[in-house]
Length: 209
Image 1 (cartoon, one colour):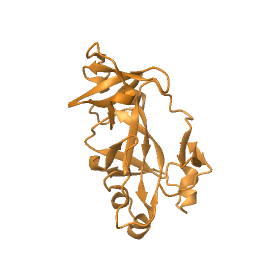
Image 2 (tube, rainbow, N blue to C red):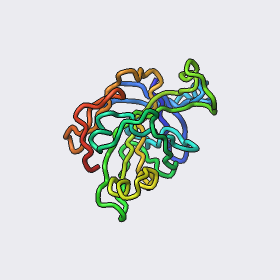
Image 3 (cartoon, one colour):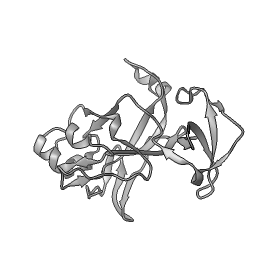
Image 4 (tube, helix red, strand yellow):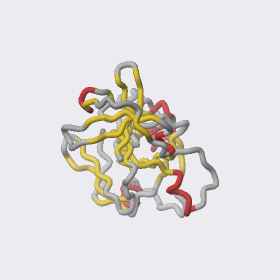
C-alpha cells in the first residue's frame, strides 16, 4: 500500500494512493495509520495532482546511519567501521517530495545522498531482531543532503546535514516494499549519479544537488 500525507485545503490527512503513474488518486484514511490501523476516512477521492504532498511523517527525530554503503565510504576515503556510525538529523530539515533544497550560505559544496528511509510506526526500544519488522510501518525515499565542505572541516556529520530542507522525504510510504537487495539510485538533471544497494553501491558519485 502507498500511504501519503497530504493537504486538502486546510485539512491534513493520510491517504492511500491508488492508480497508475499519471492518474493517481488519493483516498483519505482514518485511524492510527502508521501503526497499521487503517480504515477509510471518507468516501471522497482526490486527484493526486490536485492535492499538496507533505512529508509522509512528522518524526520526533531522524536517526541516520553512516558508512553503511561500502562504495560511498571508499569514495570519501573513509574506513568501513565494524559498527555503523549513528547520528541525528532534526525534524526541521524535512521537506516534501519536489520541494526545493535551499543552499546555506556557509557551504559551497552541497551533495546528494540517496537513501532508503525506514518509517518506524510505533514507539519502541530494545527491539529484538526478530521483532524489527513488527515496528516498521513501511519505507520511503530520502535524500540525506550534506554540506560536504562543512563535514570535512568539522569532522562530524550533524552540523553538515542538519540545515533546513536537508532531508527531502517521500513522496509516500510503501508498506509492502522488500528492502533486501533493493536498488537505490539518484539522478541529477537526468544524469545517473548514484546506483547501488545496502550491500555496496555501484558507480556512486557525490555530485551537487
